[in-house]
Length: 46
Image 1 (cartoon, rainbow, N blue to C red):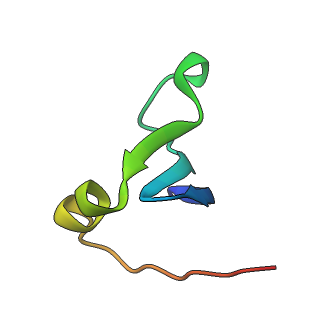
Image 2: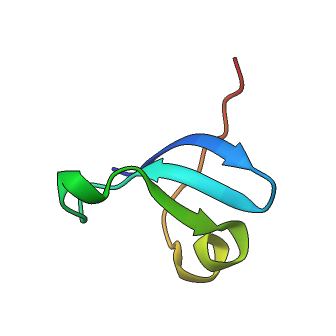
């Protein structure tokens, strides 16, 4: 499971277990995320 923890401009800040702990959190552009994501997404704002 990838957990998006923040959105800054056109970037998502996420925790992704694919990458080692020292490279967390991962910053990825929203465009790149949409281009490669094939699962289900749920956006929740507190």
